[in-house]
Length: 299
Length: 311
Image (cartoon, rainbow over all chains, first blue to last red; front, top):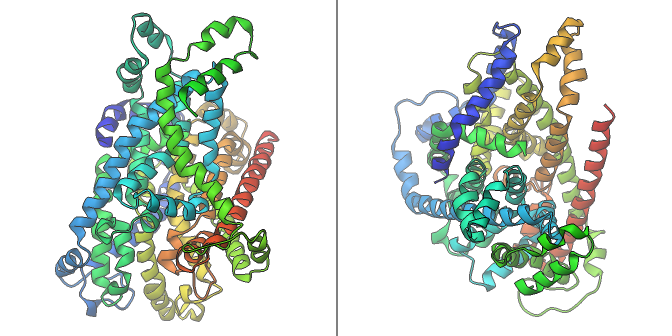
């Protein structure tokens, strides 16, 4: 879902950036080689650990040792099937997918609506101004501070499961998302909504039929940020989930550390499988992900 | 708070602003209240309530289960005498400050490089952002292996005895490992933010500066940096705030060790509160932590904003 919405918007943003780039090309158009070499060298620091993960995942235990940077002698696919069965990879993958999809969908549908209501009424009612600061102020309260009470509370409410995680991601996302959405809503001319209101459209119709589609660029940004958070998060699943069958991908890596210690190649195969879905999505949607994040930060 | 209550309150609020707006102000449609009410209730339940129950428990001797009674301020008194708590704050702040500075210096340097006329710009940008989409915990396990096995092997081959055993097993050096992982992962996001900032600087400014014969160095410190100072402020504040919560990095690399050398505040709250039967004691710790973070954020904003204005 997130990728779809992103797809529509990407074109315009890339063009914007192209234009910016174009402007800087105007004076002097030669490639800056020292900068290119510097950047290429720095990029190694990102690529080397990833390379290391891939080669290690394909090794047999007796090839481990040494620097570990050598290529494997042949591809040991057995590591992947061992890790697959040991960690019950399909189940962890499904859990992560459910939480991420649930969090993204629920966040987009609810957070945009709350932000719209706040953004359009901040000037008219002080309550909405107070609500805005109430939500945004929570950005200053890191999760570890409320962790202990939240753990008890979710357990009491029967939310120590995947559904609870979806709700928590949606609720805790409000602070940042309202901040992002409100700035954007206020930049949309209000005339369209007023015209619809004169035609007798209800506030609900106005939001879903007119405003929500206009929020597409911010929906993409918020969708991407939420997906990356929910997919990679370790702390919330660690403290909230009580059923081992509901463990998400990062949590599974933690749970199986003890057993991984006997064979690091299997551990790396497991890490690689856990990282791969996000890497694939990222490689395909890289332009949209980056422009989405940039758009969010510009607000 | 019911929607109706809220509405009457809204009406009361209307007394203050100028009279001509009044007719318009009353017309907050009921549907609008229903748009925000569920979110407000859920946020109150899952975010605000825990802050207050946390404060409540911090005055008890609750262990996480069973009966408890009120103990006044004794948790707070004990906190200030607890060397483990002191150690956690010292480590967390040392780590957060070093990681914040390192991340921002490196990210800014790379962003300036990426903003230059280089080959394969988009590809490199994609590579540098990659760490941000990967789970810190899993990357942490990879780094753990690198620090514990590959680095000592390389150091030994090269005859660097100081690094010939795992830095993660060395109480004085383990934090460096945590910083390296943290910078590797979070520079990605900051690079993108700085890049967004650098693209807002019009090239005409540089053309003018070039005509005046400025050096590259002057260009950066006199033009570029002041113009993106706003991004610098935001990045410093966000980085510090994130690093003060450090958790995944520690779990993956050192598990707080050796001993308690790299135990962060978050790890301490998690360990003591959920595994060590110190529920009430750690909620008191969390309250102190909250006060520290809020004060720090305010001070940081004030300080950095003033500096920005003085350019």
